[in-house]
Image 1 (cartoon, rainbow, N blue to C red):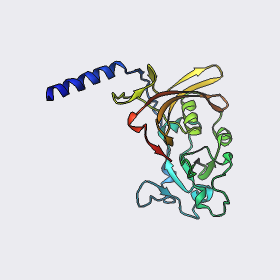
Image 2 (image 1 turned 90 degrees about the vertical axis):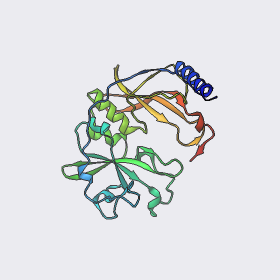
Image 3 (image 1 turned 120 degrees about the vertical axis):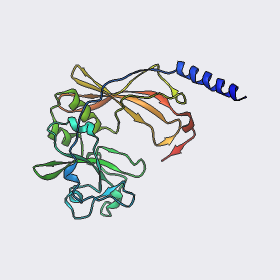
Image 4 (image 1 turned 90 degrees about the horizontal axis):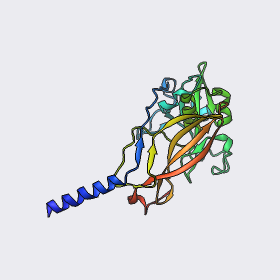
Length: 243
């Protein structure tokens, strides 16, 4: 009986392997972000140690951050290379705001909180002072033009709620929707660069798909999604609803 189970599992894994998509790997660029100016105690970790909540009256709070998070080193391609951190703005913490669920889109890049608004901005340090960056227009004012693939990658990741993936591993337990997958890379195209990134459908009811997403970045720093393709999902998540 034990041998039968082992053989059955082996056959299953073999068949699943036959259904695997081909994967093309690309090298991850060696980039680095300077976070040291934000480690000054203005936003100490809470009891969980995960959230760094900004203290009222401090420069980071006054500039518009309720908490901060370390920016990915993949934002290190932005030029000039100012120190940068993710700045989280939670309008529910501000009683002066009459409707926390109706914040103008010019006030943030994207919402990572779903029905509970948790708005992503960025804060940089320039000449010893903190400067808030709330939207793509302000991002372009500081970092445009875009002159390289590394700058295009960092610009796309800054402006969009997407992630980079390198050295991808496939699973026999996932349901694949495509026959080929490429991990993150940047392709120079007419009028700019095409940045290949990924997204996951966290909110809502399953199936919860992972997507490959192409973002066009122009030399003047404008970005836009040009394609989105379902690539796989975990069948165990099909019945899950989350918000």
